[in-house]
Amino acid sequence: MRRNDTTRIGDLGEAEALRLLNARGYGGSNLNALRRNTWTYDLEITTVRGPVRISVKTARAKRDVSLGRPRSLNRLDGDAFVMIFLPASKKQEIQIEPGGYHLLIVPGQVVKDEALAAHYYYWGDEVEKAEENTVRIKDEVNRPGSRSRAGHVFASWSERFLDAWHVLPDAVGCLPFFEGGKDRTVINKTVAPNREPASKPHREDRRITLTSRDIVRSLKYLESVGMSPEGVSRLHHFGRVQGFAFLIDYFSRREIASDRRGDTNRAFGERLSYVEREHRAAPGKGFASLIAEARRHWPLPG
Image (cartoon, rainbow, N blue to C red; front, side, top):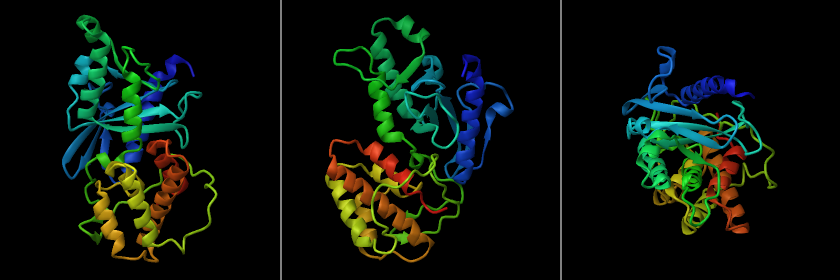
């Protein structure tokens, strides 16, 4: 892919972001359809909190993201979001298709606080150069003593915000599956992650035998080894973040039903069980990769 394709890839990233949002029940529009290269934002969606604007960044050939100059980044509202499309690996260019990219969904305030801090740390007293140069995050290892912290920020965001649909406000008309200790019907259709399901890891078919007790056991284990509420929320649904205490209480008081909601809970249980098992086998493996693998192997029912 030649560099003159960068604009086209940016357009494809915006279109894919809007498609994914629409599939999750968000009404929205591409601001660039009315005015080419709008400042700061590319999309606007409708949520229960009101209109929310989104900046879309698409890395073409490297897992290296340009977020704009500090002046531009400072215009980003703290309540906005940045959707970042990255090549799925360092060895390939991005493909805007299932399996061809990774997606980070980062709150605007986090982008401003963490990316700008790393940028100004790098430039130190060279204020003019800091203002003239682009703020970047990179998939790299920052050695001790290095001025660059772009790799630290990238690793942190990959852990916290990979496919992080839960950070967005709810779509209008969308009721989170877990709320107030009661089952709630999801009006908007849940869609599978943006990668095609791969062959599942070796394990028996537990569609019938998986129980609420299995889910509670996995939840207690993952809480004990430090998984965050945000992490476990990425395993169950795209609704609000629910803490371990709520989920443990929820599944301690009911069995998995043999209906569509039961299928969703069963997929959640399979994801939990997979992450628990893999973490027990290799405690040093990060939760971000395990969560991504579990989501890919067990997509929630559509």
